[in-house]
Image (cartoon, rainbow, N blue to C red):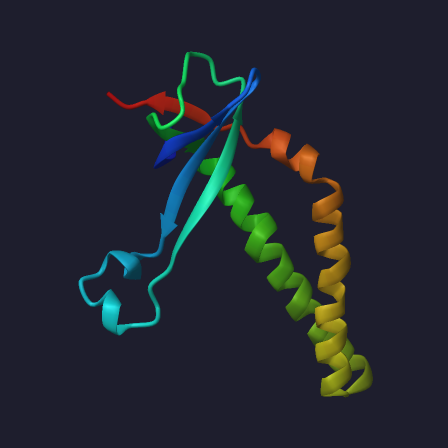
Length: 137
């Protein structure tokens, strides 16, 4: 089974979950020329792993694992669907009205309900992604 792995550090431990902080970086941020380029990108992200099993302590180095198929689902929700909504709305409004300004505003406006739906269903979506932890030695 193909997996997506990220190294991280345990930043919080509760009775039912472990929070792991990972550093997400673009390929540019690892480049030797990143100091002279504005394209480098590094962000800290926190991932909550429910019911991890095992004992974890603050500061422990671990690997967070996600099945690759779930990674594709995340890309679908985060990038592909909003892009399709944006382009689809733009094309339809341009064909109907011929007004570019109205088309652009309508396309951007259609993203508001999409992201509101994501926000309201965030707990349900969160449950559909199952992360696991592998303790590093």
